[in-house]
Length: 82
Image (cartoon, rainbow, N blue to C red):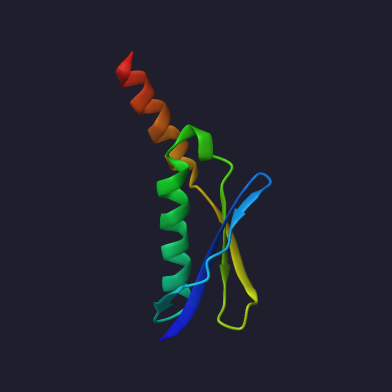
C-alpha cells in the first residue's frame, strides 16, 4: 500500500491534504480522486474544482476535474425541479 494525497483547488483557494489515504496502486488513488471531484463537482458553485493527486514523495500524479456526466446530471436534476 502507498500513501497518496488529494489537494483541492478552486480559483485562488486551495486545501492541501496533510493526512492522505492509503491505496493499493495508482489506479485506485486516481479513482478515489475522481470520486472526490465528481461528488464536490455536483454543486454548481464548485464546477471549476480541480483535485491534485500527489504521490508519497510529493510528486504530482494527476490533476482531476469533475466528469462531464456530472454537469449533465446536475442539469437534469435542475430541470426536474421546474
